[in-house]
Length: 130
Image 1 (tube, rainbow, N blue to C red):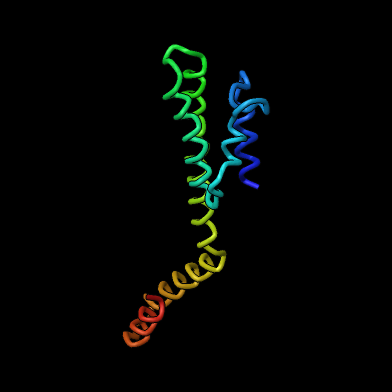
Image 2: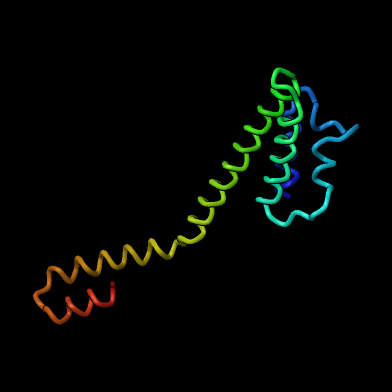
């Protein structure tokens, strides 16, 4: 699913359709080559490799070179945003709503025990909360 979204963004960004047209050798043919891609990093390296090859084969003052450079930067931004999004999703999934309930209960219990003059009870509560 993510492959289609990434490719859709690349097709939309390719203003002159130099790399995403279905005629000739384009980025779609590069993605169909072996070896099989299994991770997003594989996809990223395959796409970036395609644009780096164009940068190496084209004169620096050509349209292909400039567009390949622009597309390479665009692809790097896409995958950086995907990594950032993945990290934030992981952080959110680790934290559950029960964490807030437990935190509130712990704070409430520790404040309640602070006012009591029973050291043994205070020590037990601190041990349980920690």
